[in-house]
Length: 195
Image (cartoon, rainbow, N blue to C red; front, side, top):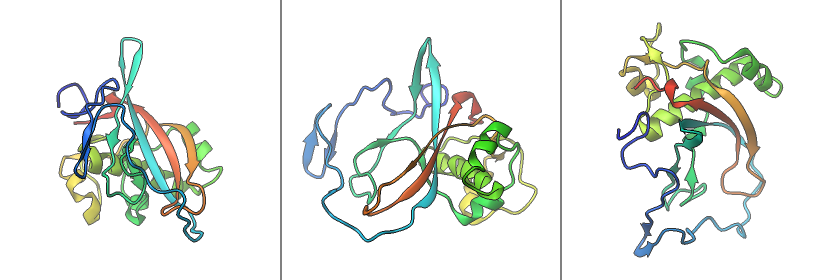
């Protein structure tokens, strides 16, 4: 890592260096190809998803961690996004070091069960780890055996810590899209990163 909690090679302070789309080189600021909205898909129920916005203050300026999705992604190709993704069934059963803050939990349970609310927070930790390699948690080992999707995370000697999460927003993908998600956006300071 080049700076505390930010992976090497990350775009810092909005400095887009461009990239190649297929055989076409794109320069900074050039429009990236995105999914075709004119295509209509049958109705599908949105899947639960969670996103974690990691924030680092540089003086009085906040910096956030984002990544650029692959050109072949079915959902939001070539877009800069925060780490996140859908909730897996195993997320509801992963032991945590500390639960969600009571205020965050109270907001989540207005539209979800307690188990589902906890799974949303845990999914944000897992997706952040899968996409960036950053471990959000505290040192420790789970009291129970973890599923295959969590074994690489557990090998880092950490247990998810949800206590530093704040709930920022909820967004539902509009109907007639290739993928639909009911996403909760959490925020946390980079100090939540164990390693």
